[in-house]
View: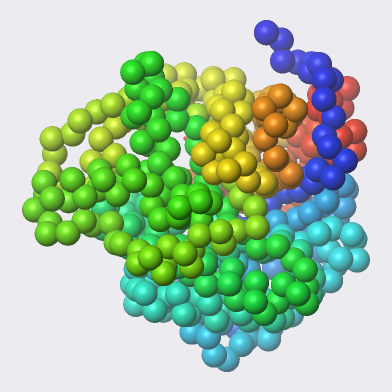
Length: 478
Ligand code: GBH
């Protein structure tokens, strides 16, 4: 079917919100300026440049540390309701430990928050988007239970200084990527590669730290500031490869995001049964005396349950999944799942449209609604990579179709989707993929020391969606 033009079937509800997102390490640069301390990404990219596709780093990135005024002009130009960005922990506490606040770091975020307010743009602030203080990493990072206390003090400081101007707080970006890719796998810093052990420890402490920050906000700051606080969980859609693969597909969903959603959003709390069961069985086969998945006490289950004012959801891709009984006794998260999965487009890697699977997004939204008592869903990321075209038709096609799927989820499936965030405002440091993969709706010239930003066709497209509150054909906007 022709996707050059969309039927204008639905308009976004009046109170529906639009925004774009970034994260500190990916855009700020100024890695050692104004008192900022070293974080895991500084350490990793400086010591292991070969681990990054193009051997680059975020030392300068988009230089948003110096160019935030221009960034906020872009946001104004787009007409967004809110801007999602993250705080760099080591700008605020250079060592990571919660003493000796670095006021230059505080000032930087004050300037951003004030300018956003002056422009009527609501601030959505992520406390942790992967740039962990390196000193805390040396203590085991999120696998150290003491992390919870350090994180809570960092959160308290952020609430104290910025709470009056922040309407939405996000405690963590993507527990799955944070734990499975940094601690289990070797894809993200510090690439520990202790799959099946460190990833579960990380997730366990992350959930407790999240709950601690939520309770702190709830008891001490909510009445004063009337903001909301939630977590962003990344959820790809897993479609059964065959009809008999439904159980396997659902198991993968539970292992990827049920493991972090269920403790917070289900009525009974705790990890999903299937996750507990599979890890316990596999652990015992591998000779462990107890499950590698740590256990919550009944008090902890209650402490974590219900600690999110809405569900922050990041979505990118659809995968196919099939049952796969592994006989390997090597300890690994992947063996625990007993299923295999692959990008639904992996056999058509170069085709733009093959990576665009809007029905997967819609199915995910319906699954979340049905699995977790119909929560309010705030889409905190959704986006598409290419290799840098200014006339980025592939990205427009992606956004158009995903926004239509979202409208169908709202109007046909009655899913409570309250907001949508495009990842990302501008091309930036894409972690292990360096600057080669681009997700921005603004182009950034990284060879120019001035880092000029130029709108891509998709920026005009998004501006029109926001302005018209409907998915407008791009033929009319480009
Ligand atoms: C998010 O991670 C992050 O929050 C954000 O910082 C990051 O820039 C953004 O996604 C884009 O990656 O699966 O082969 O199509 C989500 C994990 C991993 C999802 C890479 C998109 C694209 C490669 N992302 N993936 S592929």
